[in-house]
Length: 233
Image (cartoon, rainbow, N blue to C red; front, side, top):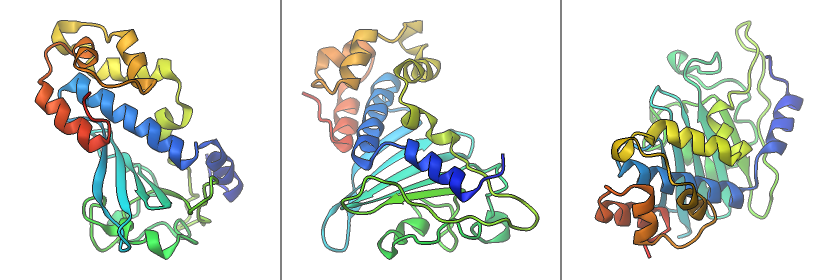
């Protein structure tokens, strides 16, 4: 469906505020880490990603579809940038060496370094993304640019890589992780009580980890969980 600025504004209102977005991304990363034993996770969170020029911590949450699509959420001090790539979308202008016109209009200068940082972007010279939203310090409303019709094509909202964190339907979250990890430990179903415990932010004990994945290496979980910001209890 063609996108209008009003459509994008309506979508932006569906997104959780940055603190809740971060909370959801941390939990997805933690579950993916434990269930997969640290092997090729689709969800990752790095609370130690870096620091801003004034020394504030930068954290980054990532979703990688494994097929060239995904998103990064950059939490840089009081600013947040949410960048999405749907590589098959008409909005992907990487082959033309450009970003879709208007997509980044109004983006604060402080967030522009995260457009071409090689840890987040395929190319250090041009931002490779199809959707961008941002939130400024002290605000809870997401802002965005004004994408324009380009080369005869209408813009579109490439939001599907954000579906799990936007909707936060726990049945869907459980189902997605079961699809990825249901064969862990010989085909065991994911322990629902342990799943709920992680979602509810209870301490990540050894017993909880073993309930989710009895065969996981605890040292791997301990290292990954500390980087997420949820150390093993």
